[in-house]
Length: 256
Image (cartoon, rainbow, N blue to C red; front, side):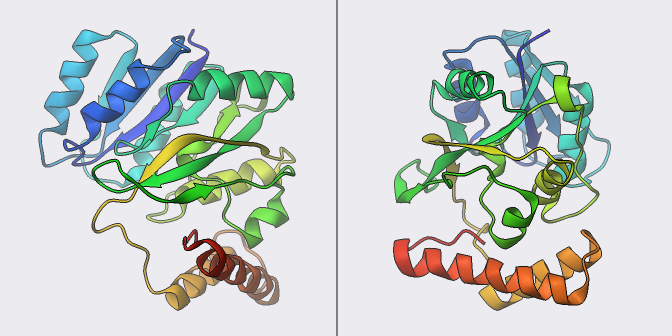
C-alpha cells in the first residue's frame, strides 16, 4: 500500500496532462499511487493516460462511460484509493517537487488528519501571474470555511486511514468545497501549512463569474446543500463576499 493516493479527474486534458505527470514523477516522496479517472474526454487524454500507465505501474487509470463531471470522477478515484493519505491534483495544475514529502511530514508532526497549504497562480504557459495565496495561521473550522474559501483542492490532504473515506456530493460546482465542509463538520479541523507547495493554473475559459452572482450562488449552496437557514446563509455569504473583496483590494487576487 502506498502512503499517498493522488486523485486526478481528467477531461480534455491533453494540453497539460504530461506536464502534470512530470510533477508527480518528480516528487521527492516516491511512495505514491496516482489514480486518474477520465470523464469521457473528447480529445486524446485517454491515449496519454494509457501511455503513462504503461510506463509506471503506480499509475492507475479508469474511464467513465459518460460525462458526469469532476465530482463523480474524483469519487471513483477516492473509491479505488489504497493510500493512507488522499491528496488532490487536477490535470492542469502542478506541485513543487517536495510537496508530498513536506506535506506528509507536516501531517505526522502535527498529528493532523486534514491539512492544506499555501499556493501560487500561473497562466497557461506556467508563468507566475499573482502573489502567493497564504493560508491562515490557525486551524480552519467549519464556521471559518463558511466565511472564507481558504482550502484549494490541489493543496488538500486527508488521512483516510484515521477518518475514513470522504466523497464529494453530486454537484456540478463546489463539490470540493462541500467535501471540506463535511470533514470539518465531523470535527476534523484543517491544519494550515503556510508554504507555497502547489500552483493553480488559470486556464482560458475558467475565469470567475460576476462577483454578485457568485455570492448569490454561495447563498443558495449554503441553504440547499448545507441546509442552513436563510439568515445564517445570508450571514455567512456576506462575510464570504467581503473576504473575497478584501483579497481583490489588498492583493489583486480573487479567491471566491
